[in-house]
Length: 302
Ligand SMILES: *[C@@H]1O[C@H](CO)[C@@H](O)[C@H](O)[C@H]1NC(C)=O
Ligand SMILES: *[C@@H]1O[C@H](CO)[C@@H](O)[C@H](O)[C@H]1NC(C)=O
Ligand SMILES: *[C@@H]1O[C@H](CO)[C@@H](O)[C@H](O)[C@H]1NC(C)=O
Ligand SMILES: *[C@@H]1O[C@H](CO)[C@@H](O)[C@H](O)[C@H]1NC(C)=O
Ligand SMILES: *[C@@H]1O[C@H](CO)[C@@H](O)[C@H](O)[C@H]1NC(C)=O
Ligand SMILES: *[C@@H]1O[C@H](CO)[C@@H](O)[C@H](O)[C@H]1NC(C)=O
Ligand SMILES: *[C@@H]1O[C@H](CO)[C@@H](O)[C@H](O)[C@H]1NC(C)=O
Ligand SMILES: *[C@@H]1O[C@H](CO)[C@@H](O)[C@H](O)[C@H]1NC(C)=O
Ligand SMILES: *[C@@H]1O[C@H](CO)[C@@H](O)[C@H](O)[C@H]1NC(C)=O
Ligand SMILES: *[C@@H]1O[C@H](CO)[C@@H](O)[C@H](O)[C@H]1NC(C)=O
Image (cartoon, rainbow, N blue to C red; front, side):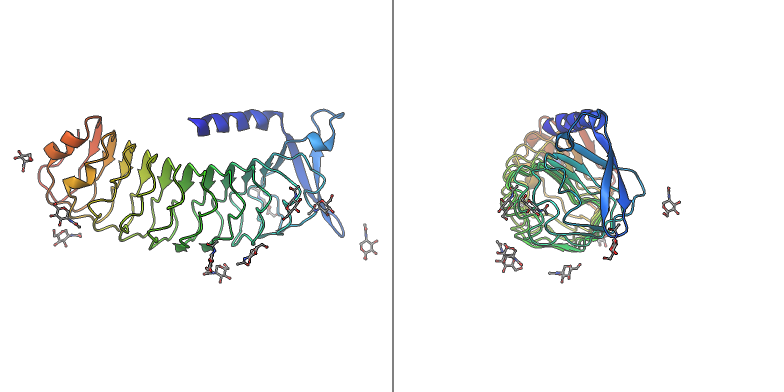
């Protein structure tokens, strides 16, 4: 809900915000903004929204230095390959949107001063790995998307410094394995999207620190089984999607503690045995259960 409101506010901001053009000078490049109100000081501008199809190979240290009051920054679809590590140093941003660029890495210290940042979109870039220095300093971060990158693995301490994270999107990557400690510090996580990766197993305890988790997306992976206690800590879970995997054994014990489950999708797996009566005895709120395309004869959904 909060995220929705957040986005709504941002849209509002968007309407009132500034549109800027990236101009390449002979020796240096700069941002040229159209002011809604000519009297408005440059410090008062809250949004830089670049036109689509801009090319900014490097976000240089001085590009934003004039905009000391900046809160919201859109640098999207701008072919950015690199961000100088001091580029945001004098800003205290609340939202950074960098989707659809060509970033492969975030240098150590880039977000060091961004203690107010709540929203960071790095989707549709070219990240192959992220490390425990990538998100250093983002102590207020609540929403992070790394969708559609080329991540193969995630260091177990990557999210150690982002304890406020509520929504984490890792959809459409190449993740094969995840260390059991990866999400350990994310006690506030409500939404986790690991859909469309190459996970074959879920390590024991991976979700054990997420008592607030309500939406978990694991569909379109290569999972063959799930440990019995995978969801034991996720008592708030309402939406679980493990469809389109290779699961053949789905013990009913998995759902003993997920008593608030409303939507469960296990379709398109290879489940040969499953007692729906036992499932329902643990999940009184269940209103959508997808079980089609499994190895069992008695298919269907309720
Ligand atoms: C760009 O740099 C060159 C060499 O340093 C200098 O001669 C020229 O005047 C500069 N141009 C501008 C517009 O500052
Ligand atoms: C984007 O820019 C390139 C080169 O500057 C140009 O060839 C292309 O047509 C532009 N695309 C759009 C959608 O404007
Ligand atoms: C940040 O501000 C300081 C002091 O005003 C200035 O010396 C420095 O060049 C600025 N750095 C950047 C990257 O804008
Ligand atoms: C940014 O961080 C540096 C230390 O890394 C600090 O000296 C500086 O005051 C900070 N600037 C702002 C505007 O918070
Ligand atoms: C990252 O930067 C911090 C602060 O400057 C430094 O202490 C740390 O050693 C750096 N880490 C790496 C891996 O470079
Ligand atoms: C992460 O990626 C960068 C460049 O993409 C590479 O230089 C670095 O070695 C990689 N680190 C690890 C731990 O794989
Ligand atoms: C970050 O990772 C490096 C090795 O990849 C490790 O040596 C270091 O202790 C980690 N730092 C933190 C703060 O977890
Ligand atoms: C899960 O629990 C069932 C029944 O208690 C047991 O037969 C099965 O071996 C357990 N599976 C794992 C992976 O622990
Ligand atoms: C489905 O599971 C059975 C055993 O329960 C196994 O023999 C078969 O290979 C599995 N099929 C796929 C496509 O994984
Ligand atoms: C499902 O489990 C219930 C309760 O343990 C049992 O009574 C019922 O016979 C089981 N149904 C099937 C088809 O195994």
